[in-house]
Image (cartoon, rainbow, N blue to C red; front, side, top):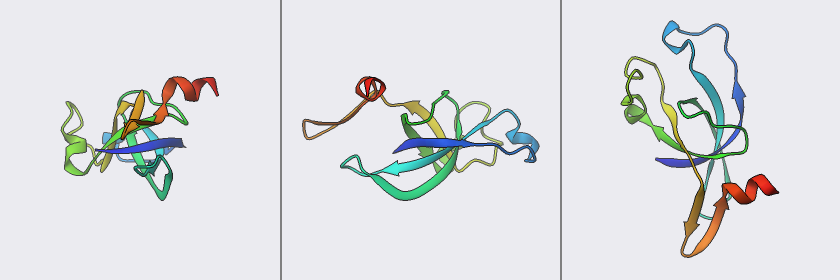
Amino acid sequence: MQIAKVRGTVVSTHKTRSLTGTKLLLLQFMDAQGQPLPKYEVAGDLVGAGVNEWVLVSRGSAARIDDGMEHRPLDALVVGIIDTVTVENNRLYSKKDAERG
């Protein structure tokens, strides 16, 4: 899994039938220092993540393991909303602090 920040949503009215009803998000991956990387990716969302939230992203064939996803053409799937990230006793991210600021 990787850590990413939700930057926006992607709307596609013309898509394969198997993606109907799947919310799509534009994600930007984060590095170990909590800084955004230049890479963006579109991912399906199973957990209802919102813009500016940090999320856990499953990629590749693992993204299709969840029930009902095995026949969807997804390379990335948001599988969790992050509450905190701590590296070497330093807090990189706190959802509670981000919501206050």
